[in-house]
Amino acid sequence: MSDHALELELELREGLQGLDEVQLSRRSEFLTASLLGVILEQFDSRCAIAYQILSEESDGEQDCQEIASKTVGGQRPPEAINPQLVQRLAELEGPQYTAGDDPAQHGPILSFFFSTAGQSGILFLVEAHPSSGFDQESADLLATMVNLVEGEIIDSLLISQQAQRIEQLENQIERAEETLADHDIELSLPDQQKPVDLPEATRTLKSLGAVSSYDPVMCDVLSHLERLRESDLSVLISGETGTGKSLLARTLHEGTRRQQHRFEVVSCGGLTPSLVEGELFGWRKGAFSGADDDQSGVFERASGGVVFLEEVGDLPLEFQQKLLRVLQEGMLRPVGGSELIPVDVRIVASTCQDLPEMVRSGKFREDLYYRLAGFTLEVPPLRDRIVDLPHLIEHFFFDALEQGSNLTRKFSRSALAELIAYPWPGNLQQLRNVVSQSVLASEQRIIPRKLVEGYLEKPSGERLHGENVQSTVEELVLRIPATEGFNDIIAEVERLVILTALRRNRGNKSRVTKQLKIPRQTLYNKLDRYGIDESEYK
Image 1 (cartoon, rainbow, N blue to C red):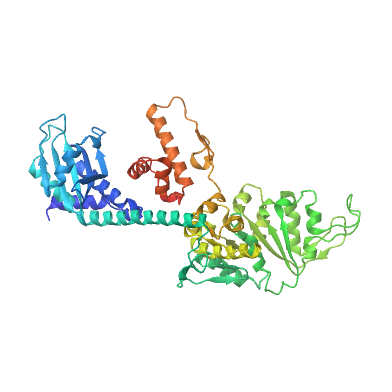
Image 2: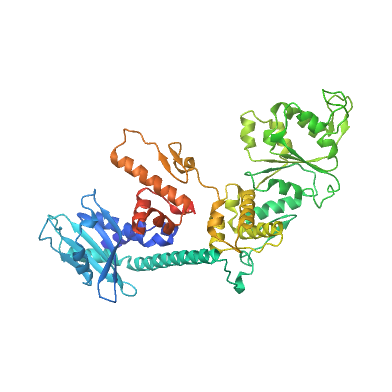
């Protein structure tokens, strides 16, 4: 291989880096666009275009579909190339040079066509300025450049076609399921006895108390909890709201030597600042107006057991010093009392806040933080535990069936796919609610996707584009400065419409094109133009 050819190949290969991260249905588009970019740098050209040529067996006519195109400074839109010329060049095997006899029609053209699987092929076309020095040798160079990655182009095209076909079949299955659900018809298949498929058998289910998981990170959390159960070390459980922190706290009580005593829950965010000391430490008769009798507090009632401080970051700062003293000394003084009462409790705390940051900002006592964080556990959000979704959906599904007495229900495949694809910002609690509501509200045995979608949280305008956007089911409102140029305004509106459609359709491009009534290729071009990764919305 010549040094020039080797240099070209290295440049092409560099342009293809990261292709594995591109969505399957767009691999051929990204690959050919990368190649076209290199071609433009090699030739003094106006535009470079790649077409997929499909032959219709019935009448012999060819269908030319653009895969990708590149232009220099927008000098010439690719659609200006005469379709008849494209079809004629696609009938010629190998590299071709076509002189631009009529500059009003087109400049000199280089083309190279090669066949792919079946009755199809790919045509690369380069149009130059009328004054360029294109000749047959230039066409041969084009063929050399394309041949360097011809195998990858063919493979990626086949992958893209298969991915699009799979998506089409999935949409057909979804429509069929919805039709069956409308008529309350259920297909009984041997492999569909359970409402969801469990993960593959090679995965190990880790269980502790009422909590179980296939996710490696969550399994580590359960392993740590298992080792901590028989100790008296304080444990701080952090994680987003709804991740099951309270359930994990109970596993440090149930099945241990402390389970014979009480498990008291203190909702720190719901404590009345003026009464918090009495609620936790108790009071004596006459301590304040309304204290008609002695009353033991949470710590005294739970002595020998566990006190769970739920969302401990919400504790009033002025009370934190008193709590720290009780934890250090194991003694408390009731409000209005003079005697000290010994208490033996294990402390488990939870938080959805960044306690170290609260310590740095002076909103939480550092000494209390270290007293509570004898051992810290971070619970992963549900969106990071995708492998657990089938298992959790099945668990909540059967719970819902029991609530509905003699209900007989089953999620459709598309409904399950919707549940698994959703990001679950509300974590386990939101998943439980959606599954229960879907099961109990369905009037059909097969729960359709549309019913499930109705219970999923709709993205707000702020999450779409910021404070300049308001979004409802019926309308979009976008505020744009009046000083913006026409093209900038149109681009911003296009971007908002596409983002909204992607979010509402969970990244399903077929549904987006159907909703917006635009061709698939137009959607791909817009995604590329605005740098939108549709996989983020699935």
